[in-house]
Image (tube, rainbow, N blue to C red; front, top):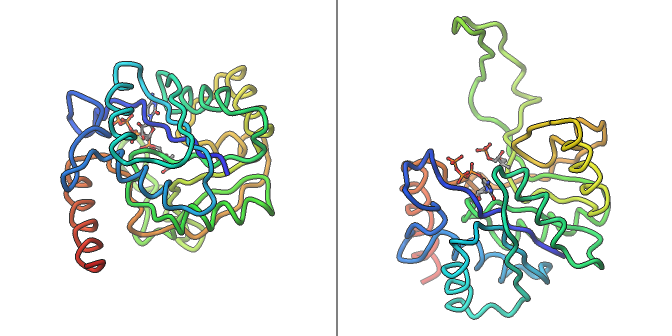
Length: 230
Ligand SMILES: Nc1ccn([C@@H]2O[C@H](COP(=O)(O)OP(=O)(O)OP(=O)(O)O)[C@@H](O)[C@H]2O)c(=O)n1
Ligand SMILES: C[C@](O)(CO)[C@H](O)COP(=O)(O)O
């Protein structure tokens, strides 16, 4: 299975002056934890990382320090996550039929989650990892007045990995560009093209490190894992 890792962001919500994926998490760059899970996955055979060229030297150093056994390709990212995935798709080897996309910032995803998504992708055109929403969600208007309380049974929080047939995802990205669609995940492009996307049960710990609080929570979870492995 081919894996593309969007890693070309800036981390504005982290308040960081550099790519948050290079920040230290339990003594290693955040991206290293994501790559370790990809390396440990049984199904992933090829890894592409979309980054900004000024981060490439550090990405290479991280990959070398991990002694990755899987082929690794660095691909120039874009201005938005959507652009970065678009570029990543162009950088896939021609033989790639299916692909998983996984945010570099979701550094706690387990190898087992990659493997479950990869296995499920043999039976559908598109899928995403997601978890049921725990909160009661309110829809509000511009005056901050509640307009609706949707039934939680139908609300799931999107995660990555998100997996697709390569040709289908390429077509949806291309069409989305032509239509000027701006989306925050790849599934949204298929939804807009009215193509069904399946949900695979994600992991509650598979948080996206977005703000400094997320970094602290991620560190806590990783510490627990390291302790339980000892
Ligand atoms: N131009 C971009 C923007 C984001 N990403 C990647 O997409 C993932 C999810 O994005 P997000 O958490 O929003 O990361 P940032 O863009 O870095 O954060 P922010 O929105 O706070 O600036 C991250 O792994 C990020 O590196 C990317 O590859 N290319
Ligand atoms: C793809 C994603 O990680 C799914 O949760 C997310 O949508 C991307 O980042 P953002 O924080 O929603 O911009």
